[in-house]
Each structure stands twice: as structure tokens, then as C-alpha cells.
Length: 530
Image (cartoon, rainbow, N blue to C red):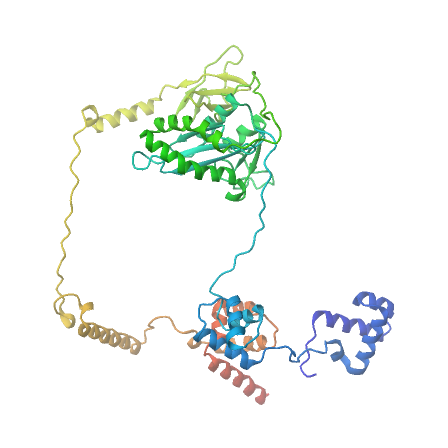
């Protein structure tokens, strides 16, 4: 067996058997290291003594498999695919070849032949994902599915609105819904407020992975702690509500299907009532909800709601709000969204300078501060002198601010005129020279003549081809020899040559055989000289 190449496993066995022959260890110990029985180890050693290292290689190595597809059939299949069965997927093509051409090939074999010939299947397969129907929750209030639906609810009569919808997983009814101009955190706070006030606190809420509900980024300090909570997630944690995230729209299919039903039926209701504003749309929606629940609700497995009653001592307004932590300045002011809020002393604390307070922006627009559970009522701080001077300078610079604004000017209508450029010299003529074949050919000849003059002057035109670069053939020769001996990989060879891996692949697969012949000839010539 000439040119024998042993694998790593076979090389390890060769070392072990040499150690047995040198009596460094017993066959019982060597067999355990090789992963065979002691009897099999003696068989391998006997074959090694007779045939040498070739006995360690598999007997079928280098042989043509008996079940290989003949080359003539492979070429015929490729020809038929290109000429007659173009655009047919591999599964269908295997059936057509069996029925019409008498060629019996499995789909996997056909796919391998065509893929190697550069003929992939025109139809991309999709990985099958197993889905099953999830059982409904047994009691009402155990799980609410929440989602927003941006749609032309008012059609052409008004702006596009977003429907914030909550549907009970057990009954399929809607405890509450409302229209908002956009899907935002305050809208979901109002949704939760009405549900908790009218029904109680649900045990769990099922949402998607929108940025309102979940922060996708990791912690900024690089720790392994959980991702920071959003305002909505913080509210659920304070209320003791379990937050469940859906990994696909199909997972929260009840609220998705409810959105489709609302987009069909509620749009008609809004059209019949003539609603044009968001207030009128909400009024129609709240009249529509009882009829929807009566029509599409289902009975529960266990009677009785699972909503937790609201604790009378719990300040719901202080939970369903935007909370942000701020540090108090030395002048007892806090900056919040381009506003300076002044904190006043009280009997318990004279100054809050340097302390951290929690700013609460309530749903009614009121802004409060909370320090160690105590609610403070800040007010807008007086502006600084620099701010007053800047405002005064702005007023003096723009005296028109003291007057009524002038009426808007009518929009300027630009009239574009097409310029008739006149060409001179060899390209002279009427119109654009690109539209005239004669002048276009003249331009091509002038360009080529200019490039030729530049070459004669010793200037480089364009990028020099890789095979013509100085020293590339000399550097490519030893790398090619190592690739043929499989001493290095293509990636390592590309790194040695200073080129990309796809570029090296194009070199090896293209017509750069002249470099290869030249390099091989140089190596042979050097060997003869030596």
C-alpha cells in the first residue's frame, strides 16, 4: 500500500504496539488503552507483524464502493436536470426519473449528485416544528393574555389607533380593552388599573417580547445577573403577578385570534356608529365588549374567579406609574426630563442634598418624589440667572416673538428646466453622446487610446491580477506543495499568502494552472541541480 496515511487513532495504535514489542507494557494493559479486548489486541499485533503499519488501516481504504452510482448515470441525471427537468425540486425529480427515465435513485443520493454539480433544489425546506394545543387555565383570572393591535380601526374617518387588549385564558372573555394613539407603557398601566379595580389582581400575564415588557440587552456591568426590568415588569413584580413571555405569536394564539375578530367586527361597529375620534371609538368599544364576551366566551373548568382581591392599604396609584431614581443636588433640586424640581424641608429632614429619591410620574400627570417611603410634593424650581439671561437674549434677538406670527408664505413651486448641454471636440453633436452609437464608439476608442498611452508611460491601470504580482508564484509553490500533502489547511494557506480563503479557492479552481505548472517545474529543476 503505497503512500499510506494513518489517522490519529491508527498512529496511536502503532505506538502502543511498538511498546508491546519492546516489552514496555503487557498486552492486557495495551488493549485497554486501544479500547479493544485482549484477544482482539493479539489479532492486531499478529497482523502488524505480518504486514507492518499497513495492517492498521482499514481494508476497504482506497477501494471503490460496490454500491456507488456509475459515473455515466450521474452525468445523465445532471444533463436531464439542466435540459428537461429544470426548476423541479429534488423529491419530485427522483419520482420523475423513476417513472419516465427508469433511473432509480433515492432522494438523498440525487440531492448529493446535483448539489456537487451546483444544482441545488429550487425549493427550500423548512424545519418541522412540533406544536400542540395548550390546555386552558382552569379558573378565570389565573392568566391574562395581553397584546396591542395597530390597525386602521377608523378606516379613512380618523387616525390609525392601537387597541390594547387583555383576554382571559380560561374563558376567552375580555375583562377590559381601550384604544390608544400608540402602544405604550402608560396605556398598559391604564389597562391594568381598570382590570384590578373591577376584577382584582390576576395571577399571571402572558405577553410577547416587546421592549415595553422585556429588556433584551444584558446588564451593562457585564455581570451574570438578570436583565433589568422595564416599567411594566417592575409593576408586575410589585403586584406579585407572574410574567410569562411568549416565544412566538402562535404561543399566545387566543389574543392574536381575538385581535383578528375585533378587526373584523369592531371595525364594522365603529363604521355604523360613525366614530371619528379616539374618545368615540373607546365609547363604542366598551359597549361592544359585553356582546363579544357573551358570544365568544367559554365555560370554565372550575367555577369561581382566581383574581386576588386588592389590599386596601396598597397604593395602586403609586405602583401604576413611571418610577425613576434621581440624586438630589446641593440646592435640593432634582432634574427630571428637562425640568428642575425643588424639594422642600419638613420636620423629619431639613435637607435632602446628596440623597437619592424616587421620582413618580402618575397617570394623571402629577409628579411626586418618594424618599424612604415618604411622599414629597416637589414644585418647579426658580430658574437660574444664566437661564434668565439666555431667555432675555433670545427674546431680544427675536423681537417677532412679541408680535403675532406672520401668515405662512405659500409653498414655492420649483420649475425644473432641462438644460441643453452642447458638446465640443470629438463628441460634438446634438443631444447626449451616450444615445448616439457613433459617438459612443468614438468615446470608447479615445478611452482605450488614453489607457494605452498611460501603460506605455509606465503607469499602472487598474488592479494588477494576482497571478501577475511580483513574487506570488514563488510564494505559491511551497504552499501548494503543502496543500497537496495535506500538511496545512486552506485557511492556513490563505493566511500565509495574505489573501482571503474564497480568493484561494478561486485560484485553485480557476485557470491558474500555469502558476502550478511553473512552480512544480521550478521545484523539479531545483531537485535536479541538487
